[in-house]
Amino acid sequence: MRILDEKREGLYVIRTLDVLMSSGVGLEAALHTIGQGGYGIISEDFSKIMKRLSGGKSRGLEYELKSMMNLAESDGYRRLLNTLYTNVTQNTDVVETLRKQGSRMEEERAEEVKKYIEELGGVPETLLSIGMIGPIILSIAGLIPQLLTGDIAAFMSIPDPALISGVVNGGLILTLVGMMLIGLKAHTKDPGL
Amino acid sequence: MFFRFLEAFNGEPLLLYLGVIGIAIAGGGIPPIIERNRRRKIENSLPGLLESLASSVGAGHGLQEAMMEQSKSAPGLLSELLKETLEESHSSDINSALTSFSAKTRSSQVQRVMMLLETAMEQDAPLQGILDSLSHDYERLNDLINRRENELLGRGILIIMFVSVGLPGLIAFIVGLFAPASAGFKLDDFNATFGTFFAAASAVGVGVSGRMLGRLKSYLWFIPLWMAISMGLYLGAVKVIGGG
Image 1 (cartoon, each protein chain N blue to C red):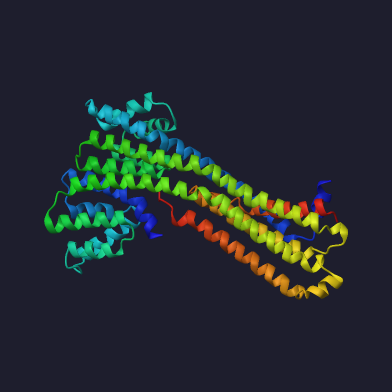
Image 2: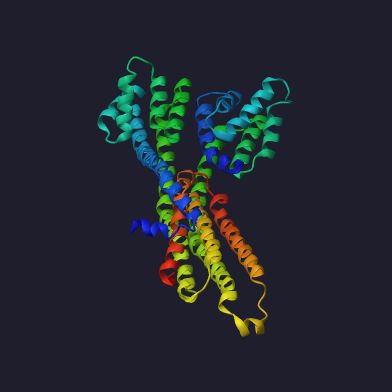
């Protein structure tokens, strides 16, 4: 997932840009260095920008950064691109802003991990509840044709065993889907460490 | 007795296949665990090494000299690897030594640090400040990774125990008690359906547990074994409690 990759690599990209630009490297050269690889999806993005710029297919770095901002999925990466864009258009102090952004991103990451741990706290119990309630009800439903026989079965007009079996199978599949959906939280909320 | 026990599941080929495949594949899950432990040891000692390097560089030593000193004095796997690399690459330049060192550690954290250091040296950037800030960055990152692992490991194990052991045990108890085969209940299809369900639920449980800890790939190796355990537990417990 793009957002996870952006979150995972964002802070390292900021630190690298900080090192490069505070030692006098220009923005385009810094983007080129990151675009050479090692920073996942961000390297790919920067590499595309540099290719378009060097191929003469672009209107300029600011337009490329702006269009990349629309592609970005995480707030941190979008803020980083915005900082670079502002630097290009208004000549701001990019190094100082990157440092502040790095610290902020680090705080956010710590918060996200804390939140992730808290949110996953109830997953074992929720999984067990869903995994238990469904099969208990369905197992009783599945046993009905055998538990109730003779006059009682005729009196209660018990449905066809094939129908009950179909309901049980469908119910078990739904239970599994429910368990998967609960477990999906562990993937979608990953802080990307 | 063991073969008699196995023969009791002759009517459940899926369980037998899963058992055999599970035992065979589980061995593949051991190397990732060993590798991960090794990598985490290296990564946990990285901030300490960077801090010491920052002090040495601040005292006026070159990076290579500082690394040499640290490799001799600091304990642990990271400094051992550093020493080994520096001894091997005494005649080559520092950049190739750094590249070789990061490749040996097989750690993305170390690789990133070395890449950044190489870039910093190329640009003549102030190394002490960079090493110091990297040390703090990676200390905080490792604290977060360790915290996630410590706090979620128990919950991950709980999920596996609940879903793969507790759930089939409980349902087997209910079914065995209220609809025992010894009393004439015909539950072959019913048990096959529920056995398959518990195997699938177990796979979901193990997958979720692995994803929570960020180790889904290494947990995948153990999924067939847990599926077999879960299914076997249900079918076995139904037979033991309900007879037949």
